[in-house]
Length: 419
Image 1: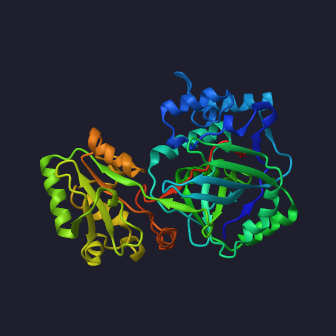
Image 2: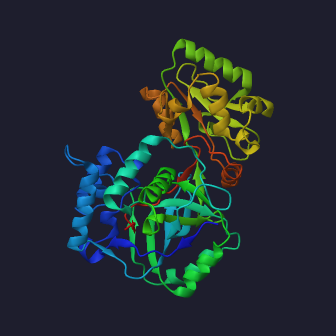
Image 3: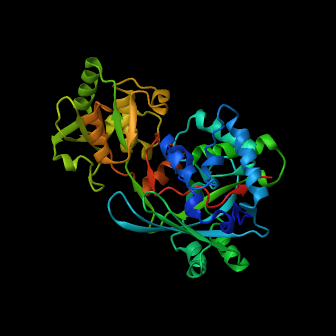
């Protein structure tokens, strides 16, 4: 089974850096150049300086290692002498306009191969980001950004053990650009730590976000070899049954649709789906709609459509050899029947977004049709967490961007030293 432990965290000294607000950032892979500049301007100690390093023509990874060492010498970063678990709540407003609180904790987790009873992925990855993160790990010898994983806890044992500690003064809080308030508490009580470890003792972990970082951790652990801190990785862990755990959809934007590709797309839709016209505000299908359901709009005909798969056998024929839970995924059916089947996109095309892009906001997806970023949009619905788990348990990885777990877990709250 997956093994978790408290960690001797590397963390900011708030007496030196001022506040977590000034030094935290979103995960590196969602930060563009303008946002990076804005974050770096907040503080000379902002985590982007080491997690998304720039070196003005030099080696950015060496620069990250040098900056990290300098922060340690200056006292901006300190290493905890005693291990602890760190409880985290995130108060946020979702893309649906509703308010939620997500609960979880940071710990270190033993790096294992993927497999039943241990740790499972849920989405496919590609090599570029893994090489980037590996070079950064070599240079800093630390996990700078946590992996977000889920575990079954129907009785809420882990959070019940941690919750009393959250009634006291927190270590710190950080508010991100979306208004999400992340509040962090250090929990070192041996009885509480043991209760959390017991709650997860026989549990399998499902990676929600951070697949590239986890696969990097596996490579790094084998590269160093032997036993030591490098055999563990920083994770934020949240119960699958947590009331604040939410998943939202990511819509598919198609570009480069020539007349010939448009004809193939239209033919595939007509062959595989029943289509009915809907109001523009109903393009995102409701979660309650049975079967495979997609919204569709292109800039040529301008007819907002609800597409429903005519028969499950169409998906089954398009995905021979795939497990049953996978063949019932909206994103997998769209990929196999339309993107690969009709438009001839390879897995590499999809991974590198050739002719394909994504949007997490239906209004932005509509705007993409107006401003020319997209020729057509497929509007998706959120994948239920139970379906995510079923696909993972079947040993399959979902297509990229099949899930949008909101909010992100900030980078900079804690680090996990590997040496």
